[in-house]
Image (cartoon, rainbow, N blue to C red):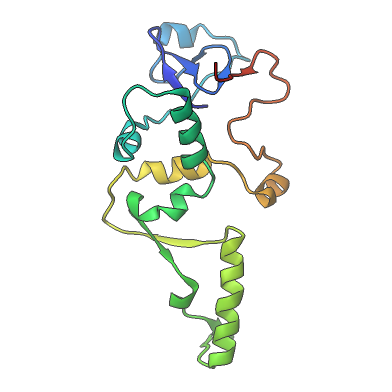
Length: 181
């Protein structure tokens, strides 16, 4: 959910007209402790202000800004495609060492074939990264943007998850999509 905390420290959804949900570690404890067992709460909330400031968004966001934020940062690929911002570096297939039966592949034809296969795997989302000590934005954003982004078709089928990370559950009758006025 993309939200802002309101004056009661409850989440006001920016994409859907939905109930105001309590936010763990933000909403007053009395409210959270009084919730029923089936209540919906927001956990692991992440403040995106440094990310939005870095990309020159104003403090006051328009509906168009919110839609652009949704479509830019939560694609399921943004964090990986911009990994250096968050202290990560992608390992390209050309930089790998390939082995067969414990022996490094040095044959140029075999090597070229293995690199081509790895490039295909990368295109389907199987990418490799390593951490660096240089990050411009908080490192936690890497996982937040990656995990909270849209799923690929393969992920959605394999893990039975929604492709649109922000779409409410189909059984949630209290949620309505917001529209530009």
